[in-house]
Image 1 (cartoon, rainbow, N blue to C red):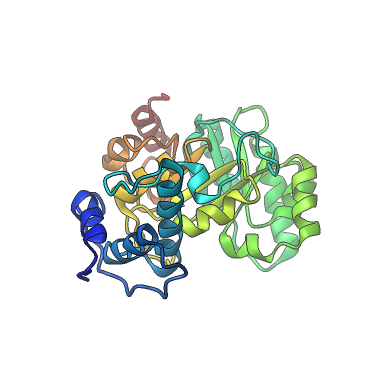
Image 2: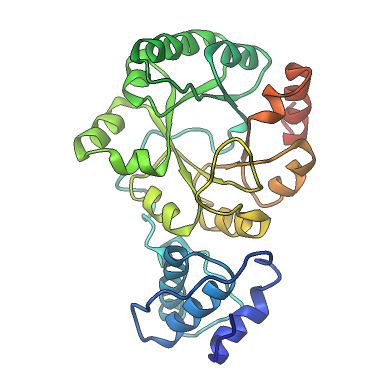
Length: 300
């Protein structure tokens, strides 16, 4: 996508290499006629950011320009206030978790949770898929029991009411799960003291997540993954680095198609945790795989 705006071309000249690999997206209808906003909307669409992320970036670029008093095409927006993120200390915030969660194993059942907790993995998530409420209850309670005495922090994917009842350390929700919460649900979650992790797949979803002040923010999918059908394209290392700079005041978890050979590149973006699934559960020796991954994290 070629833009007639010299300002947009200047943005592209400075940032095309960082955000390479994405096909241009159609430019959404502008919400403003301010030059910095329009230039950023054109350029970010050309760089392959989908409509709501391009809009989010364009608004931030305009805010950055107003704050600094000058349009700076070389300065990719990374200041939380330019995106409207909560000021510190956050008015709305969940209980805190460690800034660096280390290796984060996403596991299919309580037996796997216990196995990896005993292997020394610092953060584990139970992602148990079932429509059987009784089975979910059993599995969540078994997972909570399985990490006792290990030091592992246990997050429960989706089943937040059951997680609270079982005494889990935290819960992890996707964007659709977050949007489905009523105000009363959100208040019940926050007052329970449980930690909250939220999945994000781009700028607009990060802004949405920040509004509730989660304990950590997960960002992905970084690389292609076959584990689940993703609504968004893999984000890549360039975008991950930009996300990490913006969310530097949050604990961050990178997730999606990350293997051992990519750990160094992912960690170089500044994230404090890497989530893995297949790198452990599909390994011939999961305990040894976990040990090797922890060494790559610098924690083993």
